[in-house]
Image 1 (cartoon, one colour):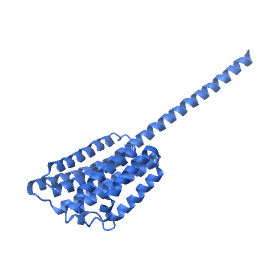
Image 2: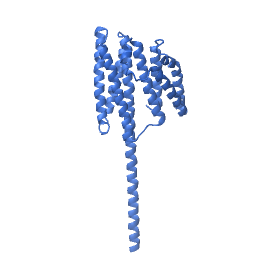
Image 3: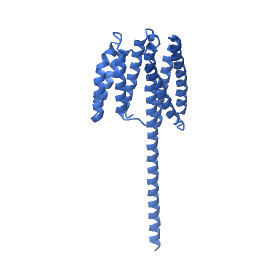
Length: 275
């Protein structure tokens, strides 16, 4: 009887330890899954803020060349609202300590940029032109904001240990490059002085960026399969239609066509990245 009791006690303890291990393992898996989901949502929001930030200044350049066009002004306001919404989403992650200072910094840079943008738009509406110094400030502030978002994106990946699938990451990088190129193209084709505030002299020119993007998209195609491959094939078809305009950006102004197809490419890349 005593031996049976000892056996029962030992077995019970073993089962209890096993059950506890299973519970702890399940809790760890659940916590890890939650952290990965949190990191994934952060990365999506940071990426979307970058894209929409480029859309705001791109729309502004188009508006500045056609200041009576209410539809173009509406494009500016729509992009501004999109960034505001994404930043509100990011602020909901303030409980994530490692990213909190970055979110605060991004919000401050966005407010500075938005103030300058609103001032310039009002100047154009009131007097028909804008202060070139403010135009230069606008481009620099937009770059500072997108740089902050890019730095924050890398920080989330580093701190969380979570990285999106390779196709998603490559698609996002391609979308960012496309948005930046579209903005540079619009700046050059909507103002005869825009080149003075399109970044430092060490930045890559539009034609070099176009060749880089061409390589990136073809790599993306070779790495994809199934529905993703179909989408990237569609992207390359659109890209082939405007690639020459980007490479020979000084030859003629086809800004409307370049903007139209660039945005369609970005939309497709966003779909491929899972956004």
